[in-house]
Length: 457
Image (tube, rainbow, N blue to C red; front, side, top):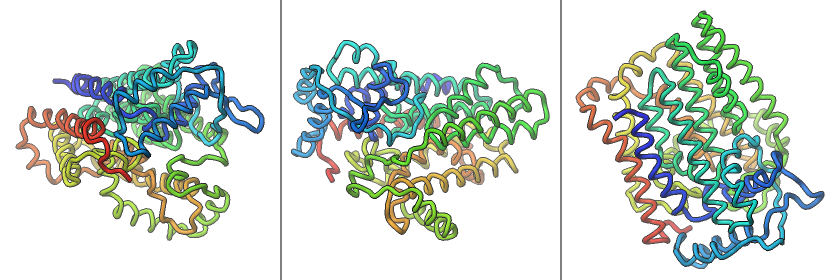
């Protein structure tokens, strides 16, 4: 079985199950992402605003979201056939409500797949849940297509890319309305392009340009991973390497420019508001606090990473909807077992590639992952809290660090276990990669459908 076949055989059925069985509007910040996609499906590439009101969307869409939330508050299971029937019977009737979409900092490119999938349902005033399902399926198709393209493009670490694309959290982001799906897939594609640059292999110009543009125009700040291309390309000193370096540097600059132009002083994650009430968002003050105590921030980030790492690992394998809601019944220790087995299987299947990633190349990837994590912690501090200390900088790090797992595994996986891993049969390693996402995702689906209330906060 090839890495591409593994990705499709496991990713398609699991993704479709998540798209249809994950409770409506329960994905990460999905209500506001859904509203953004609805606005785009209605013809607005950039968010429309009525002065002092916000962006109008059908009132029934907002009411359906509130119905799902009230069902949860009332102590009912997160997904039931009766609730789905009620949602299917609710259609737009001409009334509108206004949603403030300015807090969304992602460019429109990240929402295009979902918006395209929702064009017809929105145009014919279909029930909101049908529009949601259409957007989820389109998002899943785009995510898996880009992930397969990344695996096919890569000249190394193909099993690693395929396996991490099947991480339960990634599959859920792909199968719900979220800009994170295209962002993670674009990051995988750029890593695949980087492997070709390292191998001095030619990259079709259309693929090089389109792949780097996707990441540059996706959710910030992941465009910074594009720095891999100029560093690797200029070191190779070949025509192909120099071309990749120039394109990578150009799109890196574009990503920075777009981020600056698209940044919003109102950016604020819904989950922060849910957990802490209305926050006094003051990014200028937070930036001053951050820059005034950089050693303290770095120490707090390192401490947060290690003290909260168990939470992140649990989220990658057990909490694939709104953070900490509906964890599966699987023991927490099993999540760590999944992670260790996953890395061991990848060290076996991609052993030549891991052993070939040495010296400065490995340091570049490993330290790059550290730098990206520090940047994500700083962004979280500036935008997601009004606390003087750093106590909430890890609030969403499980989700934000997940796309960087590919860099972490490449740079941090211990090579000293290589000889022990070599005794693992290849077929057994492939089975591990297929079984882990199936078991983890099935456990959460059963939680939603059978018990319904596990982990209620």
